[in-house]
Length: 321
Image (tube, rainbow, N blue to C red; front, side, top):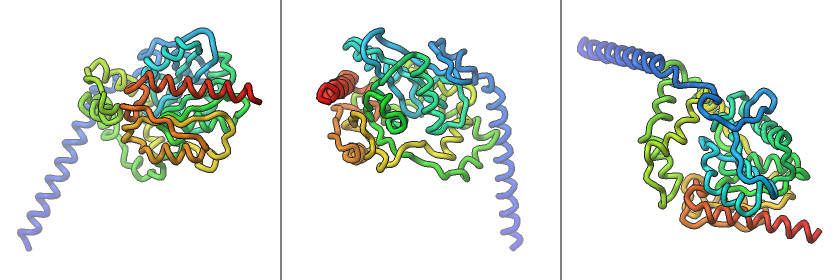
């Protein structure tokens, strides 16, 4: 009996000592890396446009032609469109891509809800005089594109849901966010989002089989936006509330021209999800060959061609009315 008590006491002392050591290490790491978080304007030189109190980061290609607005997914900066967008601009379109917070370089002013994202997108379009754009939403951005088409059908030229079923995801994990406390959460957040090894493994799974060699320069494109002030708190909110979207019934009520485009090797959002969304929208599913979830990076010409096809379909339908 005494032996068991001694053993239990030693285990307890060892556990407390380990916890104390980890806490001190986390505090030291937090203090050492605290200066890495910076204002969005210090990490990205623009362009920005102010919508309300938020500076929205964006990119632009082309000066004439019909407008296209590109909405990226979770943890994706506007850089992900750097090959597709010029292809579309060369085909005679004005192309815009904006960052949806808490990702990319848009200022972190929550709450990060569908209503908040729609306010930013609609304000962005007003400020840049974009009228009836084709909205292309990738992954998380697919839900935003569908929601705007539902809210303002006469102000949207059409939508392309790219590797995204537009449905809500997650949420109900308030208990988990209660565990994300100082000093452990800031330390884990900075370690994970600054780890070339971890980020390269995530990208490898999302890119598909034809992925490039992940140099530090390429990985930093995805890691750098996590240094924008307020990102860690924004991610906590998304974990707690989930990623917003629309319901399948709402998808069935969409009246704008629409398309669903999917990477044939997408292991992040299953092909069955794309098929179900295409069925709800009463359209065929367009597959992008040799592409994973990041189809716009894995096969840019095919994605650009799929978007151009949707624009041609929209024009044809308008002529027939």
